[in-house]
Image 1: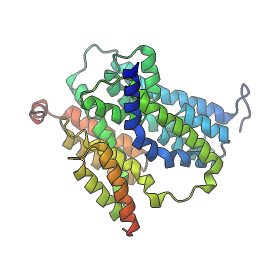
Image 2: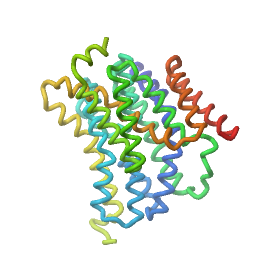
Image 3: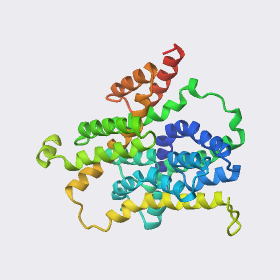
Length: 234
Length: 105
Protein backbone atom coordinates (compact mmCIF):
# COMPACT_ATOMS: atom_id res chain seq x y z
CA UNK A 1 0.00 0.00 0.00
CA UNK A 2 2.55 2.56 1.12
CA UNK A 3 4.90 1.19 -1.51
CA UNK A 4 2.22 1.77 -4.16
CA UNK A 5 1.72 5.28 -2.83
CA UNK A 6 5.41 6.14 -2.98
CA UNK A 7 5.55 4.71 -6.52
CA UNK A 8 2.55 6.82 -7.48
CA UNK A 9 4.16 9.96 -6.05
CA UNK A 10 7.41 9.18 -7.84
CA UNK A 11 5.44 8.96 -11.10
CA UNK A 12 3.76 12.29 -10.36
CA UNK A 13 7.17 13.87 -9.75
CA UNK A 14 8.58 12.44 -12.98
CA UNK A 15 5.56 13.74 -14.88
CA UNK A 16 5.60 17.22 -13.36
CA UNK A 17 7.69 18.89 -16.12
CA UNK A 18 5.30 17.47 -18.71
CA UNK A 19 2.27 18.93 -16.92
CA UNK A 20 3.89 22.38 -17.16
CA UNK A 21 5.14 21.90 -20.71
CA UNK A 22 1.83 20.60 -22.05
CA UNK A 23 -0.21 23.48 -20.58
CA UNK A 24 -0.05 25.88 -23.56
CA UNK A 25 -0.99 23.05 -25.93
CA UNK A 26 -3.93 21.96 -23.79
CA UNK A 27 -5.22 25.54 -23.67
CA UNK A 28 -4.56 26.06 -27.38
CA UNK A 29 -6.60 22.98 -28.24
CA UNK A 30 -9.58 24.30 -26.28
CA UNK A 31 -9.33 27.69 -27.99
CA UNK A 32 -8.97 26.25 -31.49
CA UNK A 33 -11.83 23.82 -30.90
CA UNK A 34 -14.21 26.73 -30.27
CA UNK A 35 -12.87 28.64 -33.27
CA UNK A 36 -13.58 25.61 -35.44
CA UNK A 37 -17.18 25.22 -34.38
CA UNK A 38 -17.01 22.88 -31.39
CA UNK A 39 -19.07 23.55 -28.29
CA UNK A 40 -17.27 23.80 -24.93
CA UNK A 41 -18.46 20.34 -23.88
CA UNK A 42 -17.36 18.83 -27.20
CA UNK A 43 -13.87 20.30 -26.74
CA UNK A 44 -13.66 18.83 -23.23
CA UNK A 45 -15.07 15.49 -24.45
CA UNK A 46 -12.43 15.20 -27.16
CA UNK A 47 -9.56 15.86 -24.75
CA UNK A 48 -11.05 13.39 -22.29
CA UNK A 49 -11.71 10.55 -24.76
CA UNK A 50 -8.90 10.92 -27.30
CA UNK A 51 -6.13 12.29 -25.03
CA UNK A 52 -3.60 12.65 -27.85
CA UNK A 53 -2.46 16.23 -28.43
CA UNK A 54 -1.12 16.17 -31.98
CA UNK A 55 -4.04 14.23 -33.43
CA UNK A 56 -6.55 16.44 -31.63
CA UNK A 57 -4.95 19.51 -33.23
CA UNK A 58 -5.02 17.91 -36.68
CA UNK A 59 -8.60 16.75 -36.23
CA UNK A 60 -9.81 20.15 -35.12
CA UNK A 61 -8.01 21.92 -37.95
CA UNK A 62 -9.63 19.68 -40.57
CA UNK A 63 -12.95 20.07 -38.83
CA UNK A 64 -12.91 23.78 -39.48
CA UNK A 65 -12.47 23.11 -43.20
CA UNK A 66 -15.69 21.05 -43.52
CA UNK A 67 -13.88 17.93 -44.65
CA UNK A 68 -15.67 14.55 -44.84
CA UNK A 69 -15.73 12.82 -41.42
CA UNK A 70 -13.98 9.65 -42.66
CA UNK A 71 -11.09 11.77 -43.94
CA UNK A 72 -10.77 13.46 -40.54
CA UNK A 73 -10.71 10.04 -38.89
CA UNK A 74 -8.14 8.73 -41.38
CA UNK A 75 -5.88 11.71 -40.63
CA UNK A 76 -6.22 11.09 -36.89
CA UNK A 77 -5.25 7.46 -37.47
CA UNK A 78 -2.21 8.48 -39.53
CA UNK A 79 -1.01 10.94 -36.89
CA UNK A 80 -1.50 8.37 -34.13
CA UNK A 81 0.16 5.54 -36.02
CA UNK A 82 3.35 5.99 -33.99
CA UNK A 83 1.38 4.64 -31.01
CA UNK A 84 1.44 1.20 -32.67
CA UNK A 85 5.23 1.24 -32.32
CA UNK A 86 5.06 2.54 -28.74
CA UNK A 87 2.56 -0.16 -27.88
CA UNK A 88 4.72 -2.96 -29.29
CA UNK A 89 7.77 -1.57 -27.49
CA UNK A 90 6.22 -0.82 -24.11
CA UNK A 91 4.00 -3.91 -23.98
CA UNK A 92 7.14 -5.93 -23.25
CA UNK A 93 7.43 -4.12 -19.88
CA UNK A 94 3.71 -4.52 -19.10
CA UNK A 95 3.84 -8.32 -18.78
CA UNK A 96 3.66 -8.31 -14.96
CA UNK A 97 0.48 -6.19 -14.97
CA UNK A 98 -3.01 -7.70 -15.05
CA UNK A 99 -4.94 -7.56 -18.34
CA UNK A 100 -7.22 -4.78 -17.10
CA UNK A 101 -4.24 -2.75 -15.83
CA UNK A 102 -2.64 -3.13 -19.26
CA UNK A 103 -5.87 -2.03 -20.96
CA UNK A 104 -5.98 1.09 -18.76
CA UNK A 105 -2.27 1.82 -19.15
CA UNK A 106 -2.51 1.76 -22.96
CA UNK A 107 -5.26 4.37 -22.89
CA UNK A 108 -2.88 6.82 -21.18
CA UNK A 109 0.10 6.10 -23.46
CA UNK A 110 1.09 9.53 -24.76
CA UNK A 111 4.50 10.54 -26.19
CA UNK A 112 6.00 11.67 -22.85
CA UNK A 113 4.39 8.77 -21.00
CA UNK A 114 5.98 6.31 -23.41
CA UNK A 115 9.41 7.95 -23.37
CA UNK A 116 9.50 8.32 -19.58
CA UNK A 117 8.44 4.69 -19.17
CA UNK A 118 11.23 3.57 -21.49
CA UNK A 119 13.65 5.71 -19.50
CA UNK A 120 12.51 3.98 -16.33
CA UNK A 121 13.28 0.63 -17.94
CA UNK A 122 16.65 2.12 -18.91
CA UNK A 123 17.44 2.78 -15.23
CA UNK A 124 16.64 -0.87 -14.52
CA UNK A 125 13.57 -0.01 -12.43
CA UNK A 126 10.36 -2.01 -12.69
CA UNK A 127 7.59 -0.33 -14.63
CA UNK A 128 4.90 -0.52 -11.95
CA UNK A 129 1.27 0.32 -12.57
CA UNK A 130 1.35 2.72 -9.59
CA UNK A 131 4.29 4.69 -11.02
CA UNK A 132 2.71 4.71 -14.48
CA UNK A 133 -0.61 6.08 -13.22
CA UNK A 134 1.19 8.55 -10.96
CA UNK A 135 2.55 10.14 -14.11
CA UNK A 136 -0.59 9.63 -16.22
CA UNK A 137 -3.38 10.89 -13.93
CA UNK A 138 -2.10 14.45 -13.28
CA UNK A 139 -1.31 14.79 -16.99
CA UNK A 140 -4.81 13.64 -17.90
CA UNK A 141 -6.63 15.79 -15.34
CA UNK A 142 -4.73 18.93 -16.35
CA UNK A 143 -5.12 18.17 -20.07
CA UNK A 144 -8.90 17.90 -19.77
CA UNK A 145 -9.14 20.96 -17.50
CA UNK A 146 -7.03 22.96 -19.96
CA UNK A 147 -9.40 22.12 -22.83
CA UNK A 148 -12.20 23.62 -20.77
CA UNK A 149 -10.16 26.68 -19.74
CA UNK A 150 -8.97 27.25 -23.31
CA UNK A 151 -12.51 26.90 -24.64
CA UNK A 152 -14.02 29.29 -22.10
CA UNK A 153 -11.24 31.87 -21.79
CA UNK A 154 -9.45 31.36 -25.11
CA UNK A 155 -9.62 34.99 -26.15
CA UNK A 156 -8.01 36.05 -22.86
CA UNK A 157 -4.89 33.94 -23.26
CA UNK A 158 -1.99 36.21 -23.93
CA UNK A 159 1.24 35.49 -25.71
CA UNK A 160 3.04 32.59 -24.01
CA UNK A 161 6.12 33.06 -26.24
CA UNK A 162 7.90 35.39 -23.80
CA UNK A 163 7.68 32.88 -20.95
CA UNK A 164 9.27 30.24 -23.15
CA UNK A 165 6.56 27.72 -22.31
CA UNK A 166 5.93 26.64 -25.89
CA UNK A 167 9.59 25.62 -26.09
CA UNK A 168 9.51 23.61 -22.85
CA UNK A 169 8.20 20.43 -24.43
CA UNK A 170 11.19 20.42 -26.77
CA UNK A 171 13.60 20.82 -23.84
CA UNK A 172 11.84 18.03 -21.99
CA UNK A 173 12.06 15.64 -24.94
CA UNK A 174 15.66 16.62 -25.61
CA UNK A 175 16.69 15.81 -22.03
CA UNK A 176 14.78 12.54 -22.28
CA UNK A 177 16.41 11.70 -25.61
CA UNK A 178 19.87 12.11 -24.11
CA UNK A 179 19.02 9.58 -21.40
CA UNK A 180 18.81 6.92 -24.14
CA UNK A 181 22.38 7.59 -25.30
CA UNK A 182 23.67 4.39 -23.68
CA UNK A 183 21.60 2.21 -26.02
CA UNK A 184 23.26 0.42 -28.88
CA UNK A 185 23.09 2.24 -32.23
CA UNK A 186 22.04 5.48 -30.52
CA UNK A 187 24.07 7.73 -32.85
CA UNK A 188 23.07 6.12 -36.18
CA UNK A 189 19.41 5.98 -35.11
CA UNK A 190 19.37 9.64 -34.05
CA UNK A 191 21.22 10.70 -37.21
CA UNK A 192 18.83 8.82 -39.51
CA UNK A 193 15.78 10.14 -37.68
CA UNK A 194 17.09 13.73 -37.57
CA UNK A 195 17.85 13.81 -41.29
CA UNK A 196 14.68 12.12 -42.51
CA UNK A 197 12.37 14.02 -40.18
CA UNK A 198 13.99 17.35 -41.14
CA UNK A 199 13.31 16.63 -44.80
CA UNK A 200 9.76 15.50 -44.00
CA UNK A 201 9.15 18.59 -41.84
CA UNK A 202 10.28 20.93 -44.63
CA UNK A 203 8.38 19.11 -47.40
CA UNK A 204 5.31 17.36 -45.93
CA UNK A 205 5.10 19.57 -42.85
CA UNK A 206 4.03 18.82 -39.28
CA UNK A 207 3.03 16.34 -37.84
CA UNK A 208 4.16 13.87 -40.55
CA UNK A 209 7.84 14.40 -39.73
CA UNK A 210 7.36 12.36 -36.53
CA UNK A 211 6.27 9.18 -38.30
CA UNK A 212 8.83 9.57 -41.10
CA UNK A 213 11.72 10.16 -38.68
CA UNK A 214 10.57 7.33 -36.45
CA UNK A 215 10.34 4.83 -39.29
CA UNK A 216 13.77 5.68 -40.75
CA UNK A 217 15.46 5.55 -37.35
CA UNK A 218 13.90 2.14 -36.62
CA UNK A 219 14.81 0.80 -40.08
CA UNK A 220 18.45 1.76 -39.55
CA UNK A 221 18.48 -0.16 -36.26
CA UNK A 222 16.68 -3.18 -37.70
CA UNK A 223 18.87 -3.38 -40.83
CA UNK A 224 22.19 -2.65 -39.08
CA UNK A 225 24.68 -5.49 -39.76
CA UNK A 226 24.54 -7.89 -36.82
CA UNK A 227 28.28 -8.13 -36.24
CA UNK A 228 28.62 -4.34 -36.12
CA UNK A 229 25.71 -4.16 -33.71
CA UNK A 230 27.45 -6.53 -31.31
CA UNK A 231 30.61 -4.45 -31.58
CA UNK A 232 28.79 -1.22 -30.79
CA UNK A 233 27.22 -2.84 -27.72
CA UNK A 234 30.62 -3.41 -26.15
CA UNK B 1 -24.31 18.88 -41.17
CA UNK B 2 -26.49 15.75 -41.19
CA UNK B 3 -28.23 16.35 -37.89
CA UNK B 4 -28.46 13.96 -34.99
CA UNK B 5 -28.11 10.21 -34.80
CA UNK B 6 -29.22 8.49 -31.59
CA UNK B 7 -29.49 11.93 -30.06
CA UNK B 8 -25.79 12.73 -30.52
CA UNK B 9 -24.47 15.41 -32.86
CA UNK B 10 -22.10 14.67 -35.76
CA UNK B 11 -19.30 16.27 -33.77
CA UNK B 12 -19.79 13.90 -30.88
CA UNK B 13 -19.84 10.89 -33.23
CA UNK B 14 -16.58 11.99 -34.81
CA UNK B 15 -15.05 12.40 -31.35
CA UNK B 16 -16.22 8.90 -30.34
CA UNK B 17 -14.76 7.31 -33.48
CA UNK B 18 -11.56 9.33 -33.07
CA UNK B 19 -11.29 7.96 -29.52
CA UNK B 20 -11.83 4.36 -30.70
CA UNK B 21 -9.24 4.73 -33.48
CA UNK B 22 -6.72 6.29 -31.10
CA UNK B 23 -7.18 3.56 -28.50
CA UNK B 24 -6.83 0.97 -31.25
CA UNK B 25 -3.40 2.37 -32.21
CA UNK B 26 -2.40 2.27 -28.53
CA UNK B 27 -3.17 -1.43 -28.01
CA UNK B 28 -2.61 -2.93 -31.46
CA UNK B 29 1.20 -2.98 -31.44
CA UNK B 30 1.16 -4.98 -28.23
CA UNK B 31 -1.63 -7.29 -29.41
CA UNK B 32 0.25 -8.07 -32.64
CA UNK B 33 3.61 -8.60 -30.92
CA UNK B 34 2.24 -10.77 -28.10
CA UNK B 35 1.00 -13.31 -30.71
CA UNK B 36 4.60 -14.30 -31.36
CA UNK B 37 6.43 -16.61 -29.01
CA UNK B 38 9.86 -15.28 -29.90
CA UNK B 39 10.86 -11.91 -31.29
CA UNK B 40 13.32 -11.81 -34.17
CA UNK B 41 16.57 -10.00 -33.20
CA UNK B 42 16.04 -7.44 -35.97
CA UNK B 43 12.53 -6.66 -34.70
CA UNK B 44 13.96 -6.43 -31.18
CA UNK B 45 16.66 -4.02 -32.41
CA UNK B 46 14.02 -1.95 -34.19
CA UNK B 47 11.83 -1.77 -31.08
CA UNK B 48 14.77 -0.76 -28.90
CA UNK B 49 15.37 2.12 -31.32
CA UNK B 50 11.77 3.41 -31.12
CA UNK B 51 12.30 5.94 -28.29
CA UNK B 52 15.44 7.54 -29.75
CA UNK B 53 14.03 7.53 -33.30
CA UNK B 54 10.65 9.06 -32.44
CA UNK B 55 11.82 11.51 -29.78
CA UNK B 56 14.50 12.85 -32.15
CA UNK B 57 11.82 13.48 -34.76
CA UNK B 58 9.65 15.28 -32.19
CA UNK B 59 12.50 17.67 -31.31
CA UNK B 60 13.58 18.43 -34.90
CA UNK B 61 11.17 21.34 -35.67
CA UNK B 62 12.29 23.21 -32.54
CA UNK B 63 15.82 23.26 -33.96
CA UNK B 64 14.82 23.87 -37.59
CA UNK B 65 12.46 26.76 -36.86
CA UNK B 66 14.33 28.13 -33.85
CA UNK B 67 16.38 31.31 -33.72
CA UNK B 68 19.69 31.75 -31.85
CA UNK B 69 17.98 31.55 -28.45
CA UNK B 70 16.51 28.12 -29.25
CA UNK B 71 19.66 26.76 -30.88
CA UNK B 72 21.93 27.87 -28.02
CA UNK B 73 19.49 26.39 -25.47
CA UNK B 74 19.43 23.07 -27.34
CA UNK B 75 23.24 22.86 -27.54
CA UNK B 76 23.73 23.71 -23.84
CA UNK B 77 20.93 21.32 -22.80
CA UNK B 78 22.58 18.48 -24.75
CA UNK B 79 25.96 19.13 -23.09
CA UNK B 80 24.39 19.58 -19.64
CA UNK B 81 22.47 16.30 -19.92
CA UNK B 82 25.80 14.42 -20.06
CA UNK B 83 26.28 15.31 -16.38
CA UNK B 84 23.02 16.56 -14.87
CA UNK B 85 19.73 14.79 -14.14
CA UNK B 86 16.78 15.19 -16.49
CA UNK B 87 14.91 17.43 -14.08
CA UNK B 88 17.88 19.79 -13.67
CA UNK B 89 18.37 20.01 -17.44
CA UNK B 90 14.69 20.79 -17.89
CA UNK B 91 14.63 23.70 -15.43
CA UNK B 92 18.03 25.00 -16.57
CA UNK B 93 16.75 24.98 -20.15
CA UNK B 94 13.65 26.88 -19.09
CA UNK B 95 15.68 29.61 -17.37
CA UNK B 96 18.04 29.75 -20.33
CA UNK B 97 15.35 30.20 -22.99
CA UNK B 98 13.68 32.98 -21.00
CA UNK B 99 17.03 34.74 -20.41
CA UNK B 100 18.15 34.46 -24.04
CA UNK B 101 14.83 35.72 -25.37
CA UNK B 102 14.89 38.55 -22.84
CA UNK B 103 18.23 39.80 -24.19
CA UNK B 104 16.72 39.71 -27.66
CA UNK B 105 18.32 36.65 -29.23
